[in-house]
Length: 527
Image (cartoon, rainbow, N blue to C red):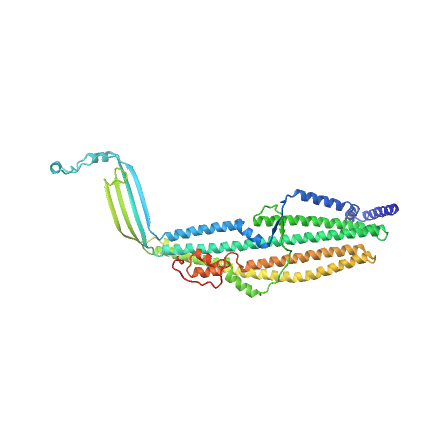
């Protein structure tokens, strides 16, 4: 045994000297071969240290993709921003609606009176001496003003717009269409968040599959190394076979270490999306798999043009611009307002001693000439309409392009998956054959290493194609506008029937019966 080991060491040193004379590229390979024995131990120690340096939750959390999506929909900041934008649009719509109602305005002022003219008026008789004598004889006031140095005034005005030339109506429509677009923009953000969660979920499944591939590769190489050691001890195999096996094992352990790192990074990315602590350990439900689609490209494209929330939001952007144009045209028309006004003034607050006046009537205001300001505003609004229409066309073109690209990616990924699955099965068979031939002594160690490398590559390609399939399918769902919370088509139907945005949301909620009647109600339909 000692002689065999000594001969092996001498062969090892001879091999090192032989390779050192070749050149710089072989020197590195020779040094790797000479240090092959301790490498697996070092790799394991580094991996253990790496795991202890990365914190993680003690208890794992089981999670499926539907639960992950729901968590993200409840906590993702982009959804919160879209909801705040919708609330802002809601209040603006409420403001535009209430502008058509009555308004009551009260103003009050207080002042101190002084000056030479004021002092002279305070002591000046209101009548002549004869008139004052007669007024005193009949017991009438002498008409002289009492001295005072302060005065309070307050005015109450109640007004109601009777006609504004379409300004209030246009403003109300403009804000309503803005709210409609905000509702659909929120749904579009939800769909984007769902896609991002799906992509992160499938990515973590892919990396977990890669980790499993490298773990199995390490086990296979360890078994092969054990077999190579047995054959070397029996004098059947050379020491170079053992060294090559050890080098390959160390290389695969390094790959396993990298796969574990990728899993941790993908897990933290998914945790961030769904609102969990970054160090939460996730136990995903199921494995990476795929179900083929059943529809054609034309079906997906037609569905997308009808159901994409952002596409429908662009329609409301055009309507909003048209309503803004109508609002601008109101400057060409007069405004008629009914009002009631009461003015009271006195030395003390709310006192009527110095005066009281009350008005009730209708006023008209017509800006006959404004030097072309209204005309310029109308032309600017028309330009906004054209911009909105151009943006709508761009959005629809983008929708069609996204559907086409996602569909092409999915079809390509499906074909690749079938090819890689066949290649993986053949690689597994080739590895088994190479292993058996090596044990029987009819094939070389290099053939086994080559077969093992091909097997790892084939399995990696297979799971990578599975990930591509699932990602492309999720992208296609995003491209066609698969609803999350509301059906955009039902929402538009409700809005066109006259329902308020709130009622339209309730009608379009996912889970409502598709054949629910669209009944007009005067109480429910209020612009």
